[in-house]
Length: 451
Image 1 (tube, helix red, strand yellow):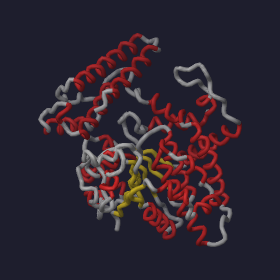
Image 2 (cartoon, one colour):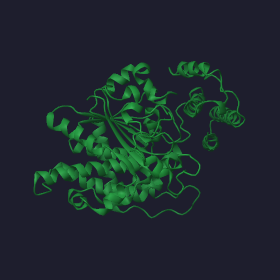
Image 3 (cartoon, one colour):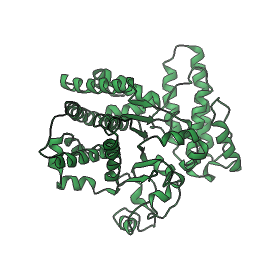
């Protein structure tokens, strides 16, 4: 359990309250600070979890029903998954029950700062993306034969998804390969093999075949792709890069983004983060020319070309959103306390809706853990088995993009877990799966629930 979550929340809200002029809003903010401080005390001293107060959201009864079934456990005597979900849901209730701070996100400042700190990657990727999108729009011939074009398109899809996979850990060498010309140079290149060596299972070819087959079968029809989002900031930026590419390449005609409904696990995307990112791109000079927090020294201003590249992203993504090709669709299920095994019974409307998608991307560690029930699976158990009712015959095609940050991992080849444990720092000396804690290793796993 992370104690600093509450500390960050308290500090952020206290800072916001200190800038207020309205006495009622100040008093309301201070009362919310007191509730956050009390929650931190309860956690640190292993007090029993208490029922959520009714803040008007439908999920209160679900949380409290499960808490009652657990016989009112203490913080240190309950599963990690329920405790963490309960923590963020309870923090959310403090704001929902306030008068003047209902829509305030205590993590928003931190999420935006990760985007600002990723300036070099943002600028390089923006330039490459603009070049690629214009190339796709112009439909300029890139290669000599259809086979070469097909190979380039496969590799480009993989590059886009791998940028999306690594998120804030993106290797900038990936960003050099976003044109068909450069992609051709990558085929069989040693650099690409090096980039992929930390992806333990890579089902991107199967995912590409799924989308390409749908495109070839019904090129004029509606073909939807869904992305269950993870983190805001730079990671949301690269998710939108992927979404824009899929649309312009014709691999999808509509992208549904699934953010969380409430501030969640500090950095997860809520709808306001999408608007915040677009606003930042609409006026990038103001964002990037401002001195960093705690410093009086302003960074170098953006060049005219950099402003143009970022403005292109704003215009492109705003247009896709306005035309209904890029849609945000939050659902309370994504912030429920249990695993995604419960989707068919807990959120049947969402379950049926996801069946309409050609492919559903699940981003990040928490979404992966929830897909697999956060269970202690043997690492060789097939991915389709571990995701239970979301697996074969579910009617949903799933692609999980996950950098490993916890013990839960499935679908590995026989002996791979042992090999990784035997590496320096891998945990073999203790029996723990330490290799899976750092985010150095990743899995990209596909399950065709429509097969």
